[in-house]
Length: 273
Image (cartoon, rainbow, N blue to C red):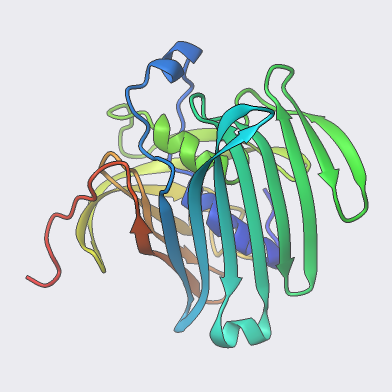
């Protein structure tokens, strides 16, 4: 996947959402005891560029319906703040509506403004036929595209991979991939599991799983392995930190706030002690 400057914010959301991948049968999906998230869950992430507190991203989950079918509705929002907003204004809105049992997307909305660049798309997924119907609301054009099995959108991947992460199946340096459909194209997004680490955070010391997403080096990132992602090693599987070395400078994303988790948030050691 090629990234231009305006795609960097999208990439950060993608990494926040992408934890791991395992092909599961339909039976596996329906018999999973309890999902690691619930309606009412909410996160706020703080994005730093160098010394600047550049942006915030939030992600919340609620119950909804599509054609009288119960679904979960995830709403994401990202914006630049302070001095960064003067140089590069961002107002990004994302919505996805996904099956509350299989955790596959039915409807995805991307409405963004990034430094004068705009995009307003809707994607309707047909997983029986493995098709996606994309509507560009800016020019009222539509197209239909083939998609891979269980293809995820940018936001639904966050929930699908938390639900079906292959526990006790990954060894350090083992790689895995996920099928994603973004805008008009299919992508295979590849990551590597690096092992486990206790990470010092604003909440305390947290047991984490550590990952290395593969990116394209050159325009934005220094090297193919320039990004590191930490995910809590508990039943919630929350992305708690991301770091990326860019061609110019670096970016750090930290979990700032959260509420209504499905399981207790485990802290190994309190920072105040």
